[in-house]
Length: 396
Image (tube, rainbow, N blue to C red; front, top):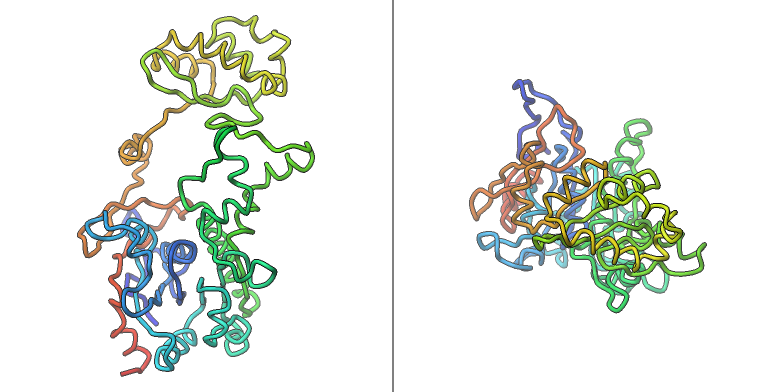
């Protein structure tokens, strides 16, 4: 089944270069964030991604908001370069169309409600029995078995279950992460799992069954606090915007009202910080601050000392001192400032993508081979490609 975009990508010299996944077809019964994020990354690498949406509105992420010229910000981010086919999988006609699609696919992805794919006849075991080379990837909240298998799983709830809220926020108030981190983590593991399975298939000819749960993906990302809590016998403290176990590492407010973030990672940097930034090397010899563990234990006293000194400096002078001392630092940017970030502009990280709302900005994703340009095909309308795909399948 040929893709809708070019079969290959021109490099900077105009020479045609194969993308890593040119010729790979992905069929995805997907919605929301996790599965669409995984398949969009496959599309970036050249895969043909056919997005199966429900009739009568499609992926419900289309309705999360309408701020991108009437389109949803989530949907625009996650669904460029895909073809959309609208099917009613509760009907035999819809299921037959999906069966024909899967028969021609290299990869099948789904993140339906727990057990729904199996009840429709598209469980991984059944599909791989009919199509041994197929790579099947299922994404769920908690996995296909166990006491939580049938629970609804929304990102915030999974953040709670994975312990993320126990370490994020202030001592008085836990705070959720401001992005769909559990969905994104699951999408990343689905993406890497599919790539690994496709690589193995080139050697063995055998497909794979991949199961990714949002809970397990996020628990893997919780590795440091999990180890800390188990072997220290206590939770890492919720430290707001500061680091719970490294000090000084966090925000300081300058005389001009600007907040600068800084991070001291080791004793060499601590000595340089005292010498070049605070201009008082003797502070480094204070018995309360000689090691990171001691500084973390006395973080309140350390913070008062640093704040009193920094409050006399404007942000430009503080950052000059930090840079001279080799101390990492950054500023808090709002999202409009990120769009205009000088580093991203210097590295040419912005592209454009077409949509029914017109031409939109898009970010060039990291990790791409340097001799290709990722596919930035248009964002599809619901069921936009239904008629053309059904014709390919021989269905009137």
